[in-house]
Image 1: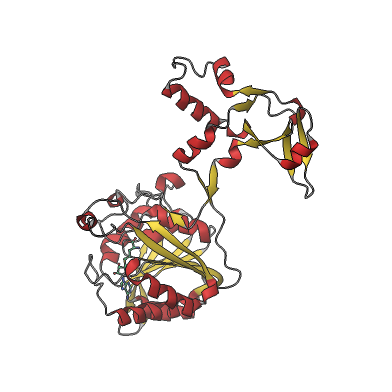
Image 2 (image 1 turned 135 degrees about the horizontal axis):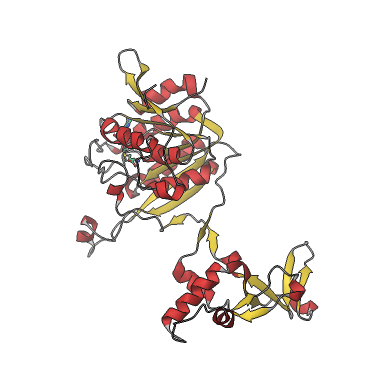
Length: 388
Ligand SMILES: C[S@@+](CC[C@H](N)C(=O)[O-])C[C@H]1O[C@@H](n2cnc3c(N)ncnc32)[C@H](O)[C@@H]1O
């Protein structure tokens, strides 16, 4: 039976317990963004529990989630400082301490607003945590790379001053020119005052554009010992290929313009979230870019993703645009007033926010809106989007 995407109105513990019958082992990824136990009512849901009750609430849900996860599945839980340490211990107990794949610290707000009113006696809080656990020994996070920040890159770019004029030729015949002379000869610096900031900026842009043939020479003991004349290919003892230039190693800019993604995420924008989705959901809505990164780390197109704390529907919206199948649950009416219209817009290609542009998303697909019924302890399809 082909399963469709599902938006489920109901208590997530009851729904997940029920899903064991139809969806055991289905999900490659779970993203949980539970109430953080802030002690307030941030929007349309209560978030004030006794600490022990909160732990019980989360523990019950982790237990109900486990059988739904694939053996190689990955669970992400987002949390702020208040309960983070306790949640970590709880997740260690539920999934195993050695199953923790990463503890990411993510910048979730800007240095502005209410948090600044206490800034003279406290450090303003701008971070949250993502605790990421694998379900089995085969669970993996992908090795993603991301562009280096321009300020960091500018430091590197200073060193890369030569360009290979004829990179298609064998290395021994390469002609290395100064990038400035190369650009000048092609009219690339016309109208720019020599030594001006504009000229420097144009040269940086050209270096990035031609990164596959922009080079720098660095010391290398193996190549120094061989001290070959001119430019030559050299293979090290393990078979690794080097390009030697008069005893030094040639490095290519293209190999240094990005870096591996670490467990410190400060690059995701958290402003203008009101432009993502249909309602404000101001204090709880997560950026689409954050979910995009999590989904990139742990899933492939066609994989199933579950979010038991749907809120405004961010996970489902992004998973859908990325070609993943999804199931998401919320017990409050904003599932109908925010998540449902948001996902309808995604299907219809009318959602212009978030990662739509990045992914060239133009619509398609559908989902079922399902209600969990208290009386029969069962789920019931109440609407198909688009209609059958
Ligand atoms: C922090 S918000 C999630 C926000 C979401 N990630 C987004 O980007 O919009 C937590 C959500 O969990 C829901 N929730 C709380 N307790 C629940 C329960 N027992 N069953 C289902 N949903 C629940 C709340 O209604 C709220 O929408």
